[in-house]
Length: 89
Image (cartoon, rainbow, N blue to C red; front, side):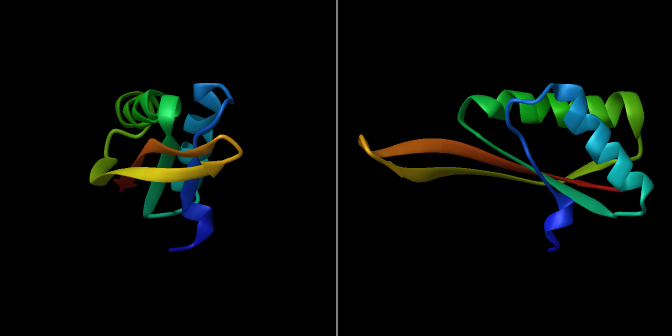
């Protein structure tokens, strides 16, 4: 899977991510993966729903993966939830 098809959700406004997804679908990409961890998970769901309902109605959910990742830091290891939402045209 090419890196171009992956959208990493962070601190940017929600509509920035929606615009990036719409642009990629308009450039004839057939699927896009939205990835988020921790508090950004709810934003990832919002991005997928806004894209599907307001911009490209024919886009469907292909796969949704939920995981717990171990993040290593100075303060020790911690578990962080993550989500991957695959949208397919």
